Length: 437
Ligand SMILES: NC(=O)c1ccc[n+]([C@@H]2O[C@H](COP(=O)([O-])OP(=O)(O)OC[C@H]3O[C@@H](n4cnc5c(N)ncnc54)[C@H](O)[C@@H]3O)[C@@H](O)[C@H]2O)c1
Ligand SMILES: [Zn+2]
Image (cartoon, rainbow, N blue to C red):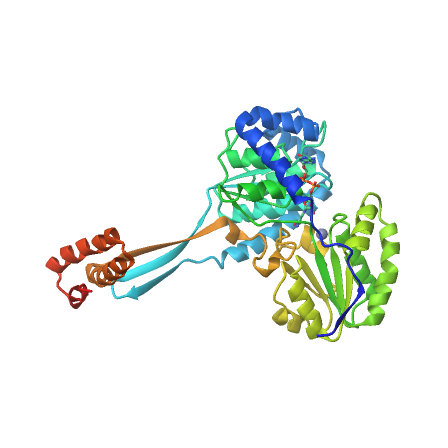
């Protein structure tokens, strides 16, 4: 396959992971020892918040009263779309049952976790949409208790729009806490809340590292690094729209890669010419983030044909993948690795980020090679069961006893033997004769 980099990245996103890990490990150890008091002191130290940590119902109501009706309408619109999509996913969640042998029936059930914690990032931007994406999905999955947390703003607490979204989606408890202290409070079940079974939601490197360390003790949705996006464009694409879309996602942060793969050199050159002006026209600090992301992490890749573009996409496994090219059905069939796919110029990653329905909590840094994003399935446990009648038990007993003895596991063999003895007496059958090795 022939591909040429018209613009290469200076870096691949990687954080100072060892430093972050040491900081987060120390904080978790302090919180384990110091409990709620230590959580409160971190909130004071890191987020300058000394107010109540658990948000009460009056505060929820006051937040709703403060917001303009038009914003509440928009939030309700996005919530309805996200819920509709999660409900459709829920219809794909099914148990199964099969008669494996005559008399041996086994099945599978999907059981939602009892308690989930939803982290809603809030350091830099007010991620209203992250509240909608995480809490709605947990609610539709049937999670029994949902705690949500987000960094408080000094003197304000969680911003009113995020509180409104959390309340609308059905959060049972809301914590004025961000970062490691928020994650730890939910994982440890502080403030009288249930200890969560799973922690979900995006966050900065401290949040991601806390989730990584706690994984095992509790479940998590996925490991998440800086957000990334790829546009695939052919000669039919509009270079101005492609450029605006790339800049829109570079805004996330200085280390958020955006990639363009195209079969059209003229389009690539036009996009590279327009992007700097679009970045300069953004307000600060967004412009600085996008400028750094474009300079250090962005790539523009010229491909021989659409199959080469598709291979680049499969290789990068981007979090967001946007096709602005002819024959969208071909692309939907062909592409194999992405968190969420956007087909055609009429939609855009920003729609998915905020309002359209499919989840925006997605695998980053190539994790789309092995997982999809947040869905109702992440809140469900796929568990199995079995039952057998006596005839089936005799058949299983013979094979189990023989395999166990070859493995050297005499105790296991005897669990089979006792059934062969008991059931042989009541219902002799051909299987009983097979026990001798
Ligand atoms: N992929 C997605 O779906 C998606 C969506 C929204 C946001 N995001 C990501 O979420 C992240 C949001 O990051 P953010 O920082 O704005 O908000 P955040 O809520 O993740 O982090 C803020 C918290 O970090 C903690 N913190 C800050 N400095 C610290 C330090 N030196 N030591 C210990 N703790 C410290 C503070 O306690 C604060 O509450 C970004 O990386 C963004 O890309 C991803
Ligand atoms: Zn985005």
